Length: 236
Image (cartoon, rainbow, N blue to C red; front, side):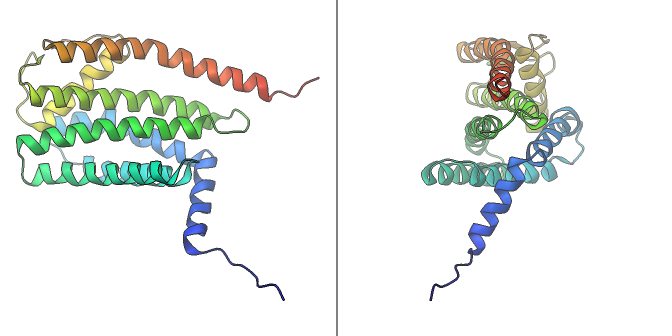
């Protein structure tokens, strides 16, 4: 007599997360969180107002759930989860006990975490299936995440080599530094420009690479989506 096999709790959780990310909801929440974080919370933090912690928790939760849901090896999944947790712990410790080492380490981990999350978003975006609004949101998410990743990289360079980036008014604390470099990063990514200038060679190299990526990324992503849409069309 055959035994009925019932899915374990972890299998049920993975199934629900896969359903969450296979539809529009996962990338929709990521997009909304990123837009609010970049364009609302970060400028308010520069003014000394709270609110970022809540969205940081949301982003960490979405990152981990996305890493568990996408089709990748267990080693890659474990690596993403460990780096996300480590980055969150180091950034939290840096706010409780601010030291140059914790700030630099936190900025480096943030850069790596955001780039890994770009990979997760792209895996979800280019999964098999028809081209939907969710995939367009994935392109927006990847673009915003790249801007945040470069902002963290600029922050690491500025913390490692003070004076690497020239400001009109020097930031007074870590929140102002993050806000100013986020503004600078998206000014470079979109080729808008800003009143902040890179001085150190490392900062200039990052600026050039982001400017090139900012021009290529939208064209490549949209081109890939158009190609997927053409391939998914029924052949007559």
